[in-house]
Structures are given as C-alpha cells and as structure tokens.
Image 1: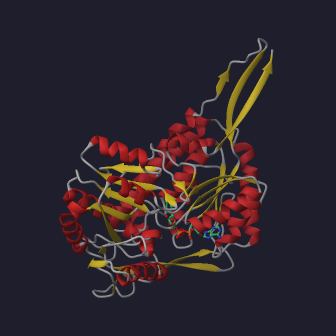
Image 2: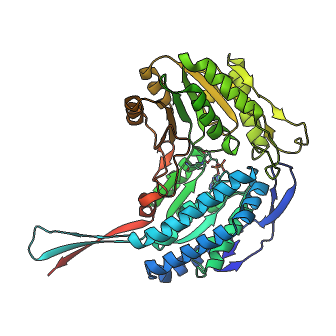
Image 3: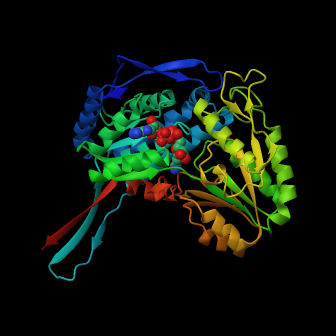
Length: 473
Ligand code: NAD
C-alpha cells in the first residue's frame, strides 16, 4: 500500500499467483479500515495544495512518469506476463498503450480552457473556469493491469485531482510498479495513493460514501459497476463507468471473408479473449460462411497456448479457475443446444499446462439467440459464429444486447459501412479495423457498458468541474 508518500505493509497479506503455472509470485497487504481512512485523509489534505499547482508543473511530472515507463518498458511487460499471463509481445504493446495516456494528458493538462460568454446586460460579464473535481477513487480490473491505471490516473492528475487507486486483487504487482513510477517522477506525498484489499467492497463502499471523495472512476463488470453507481448516486458523486461488453462483428456480403477471418481471429484471441471489446458474436453472411469458418478455424487451431514468457506462444492462460468454468459452461451449453464445435472446446492440460488455467482456442458455428453465449459476456477464447441473411436482420441482432461498448464491421462498400456505423448502438466501432483504440480517441460505452469516456479530449473533462463567474462591472 502507498499512503501519503510511504510504502506500508499490513497485518495480513494477499497472495498473487502466476496464472500460467499456479505459482505464488508475491504478496501484498490487505488494508484495514484505518488504512482506508488514512489514504482518504492524505488525498484530501494533498488536494488543497495540488489543485493550486500550475498545469505546466503537473504536465512536467506526467511527462517524467512517461519517460520512466518507456525506460522500464521491458521490465514492466515481463512483470505483466508473469502476473496476468498475456504473451510478452502483447504485454509490451500494453505498456506502450498505457504510457501513451501519460504523454497525451501531459499535453492536455495545458489545454483546459474556460470561456468568456457575452451577456444581454451591458454591465455584466460571464466567465467560465474549469477546476478539478477533487479526490478521486479509482478501481481497476486485472485484464489490462497497467493501461487501465494510466487511463484514469493521467487525466485525473493532469486536471489537478488527487487519487486513491484500488487495483484488482489478481494484479496488484503491476499496480505497485506503476505507483513506484509516479513516486519516482516526483508527485508530492498524498497526490497518488494505493490500497490493496482482499474484499474490494470495503474500499468501494468508502469511495462511494465518504464525503471527501468527489469522484469514482471504475472499470470492471456491469453488475459491480451498477452497484457502485447506485451507492455513488445516493451520495451525489461524479462517476465514470467502463463496464462489460459483448461486441458484435459483422461480415457483410461485400467483404473479403478470408481477410475478415484473419482480422477477427487476431482481435478475438488477443489477451485470451479477456477484453471488454473482444468480438463475442460474429455475424457472417450466409454466402461467406464456408471460407470464413475454414480460415478462422485454421488460425485458431494453429495458436500455441502456453507460458507467455516462452517464444512462439500466441495465447496465454485465463486468469483463474472460475474463468475456465464460465467459458466451458457457455461452450457446453451452446453445443447442447445444437452449435457445431469447429475446433477447441476443452481445457488444455497436456505439455506442462496442467497447473495453469488454459482453454483451447475455440470456434463454434450455428450459434443462436437461445444460447447463453449469445447473451452473456464471454471473456474467453471462444469465437461464436452466427449466420445471417439480410442487412436489416443483422443490424437488429447486433443491437439486441444490453451492452453497447464495441462493434466491428467488415465491408468493402462505403455506403454499407456508413449505414452500419450509424445504425449500431455502440461507443466504439472498428470499420475494417481491429484496433480502434488510442490515447487520442474517446473510449467508452452506451447502455449497460457504462457512463463517460476515457482518453481523448473527453477524458480530462471527466475530472473537471465547471465554474461560472457573473461579474457586474
Ligand atoms: P470485476 O467487476 O469483478 O472487478 C473489477 C474491479 O472491481 C476490481 O478491482 C475488483 O476488485 C473491484 N470490485 C469487485 N467487486 C467490488 C465491489 N463490490 N466494490 C468495489 N470494487 C469491487 O471485474 P473483473 O472480472 O476484474 O474485470 C472484467 C470486467 O471488466 C469485464 O466485464 C470487462 O468487460 C470489464 N472491462 C471493461 C473495460 C472498459 O473499458 N469498458 C475495460 C476492461 C475491462
């Protein structure tokens, strides 16, 4: 734990496990109620001075943190692979993506503009100024254990807020490494704090109810997000909610099915399918079904599962036993209801994988709306393929979900792509593009996928209040 510029140990500890081997790789403290109080008090006290610092100063510290992250890219990536499981190349990409937020918001800090508004009265002037929201409670998930931290902390700090981070129980070591970077960059005591905890509700409840905390920013599952949002609303707190997704991917008749299968296999199996923007319902026009399935199945079958530190490994483990059980129950339910298993469909235990949480890259065809996998977020290496006949049908099916985070379209016809882009109720749409994300672009969802946006110009607005001055002159 890191409170008021000091590293603290606790009376009891939490173990951290490598999901590829089952080995315990570290311990972190389990915070007490006194630690929660100390962190809130430290962030509240530090805010009084931090909010008065210049944007140029805050920018400089963020820039320094960015430099440190880039310098330590390999060490951070290795730690991420050890703790979270993704192949080293994917970890290196995530560290770079995470660092991008520090650089972007180091620059945006200096572009928080106000407004001067004309009045109808001759002797009146209106001035609008932006000010930091206050102390921020930030809760992050394990699937992107570094970039989800910088995506929140960089804009909050740039805006002049102080922060208490509560990382996921499975990946606190990556969070600790990031806090070490903020400390080394020179952020003053109390500006950045971190609490680790076995029962996250204890910290979550404090974030939502303590009057000193003015904003909750959360990335995680929809059920937890809804619970926290309700509690935060009762206490009139600002919230940002980045929640679950169930992305549709549509392969239109004018697309190249082999090219689409190549792209969708890359994004589907990225991070072993444990991504909120992972394509979870792949709608393929009936004319393209055969070549699409052949290519997707062949690519899934060729992926080598294993320890992400080993050369040639294309897919890492799932995060834990419950994740394996959830994925397998969705696959077995689909098969029982008539889906065809094209490849995969089982836990992997051969070739030294028995102590980890490995599941075979899986392709299912003939998936229908009655199956669990059609409705529930998957969060695993399973590509469910659904056949469709008309554009009207597929848009209705794609939108028929409680989620609204990401969607993908494959089409070589500009008007088809534009019609689909406008008709889909999702916050992020990749059009012949499997990576529609960047620190410069707004990231976030509609419906039960959340509230607010991260990254881009919008990202810093989430941490700003609007203050109006009416001047009689
Ligand atoms: P989760 O909701 O179980 O946990 C996320 C975080 O919330 C963790 O830090 C956890 O400790 C904490 N948490 C859990 N219960 C809590 C409670 N009662 N009070 C306070 N905090 C609590 O989700 P997860 O399984 O760790 O993460 C996967 C989910 O996150 C998926 O649904 C995924 O789609 C979503 N996600 C969304 C985005 C996005 O940007 N929209 C990005 C990554 C992940």
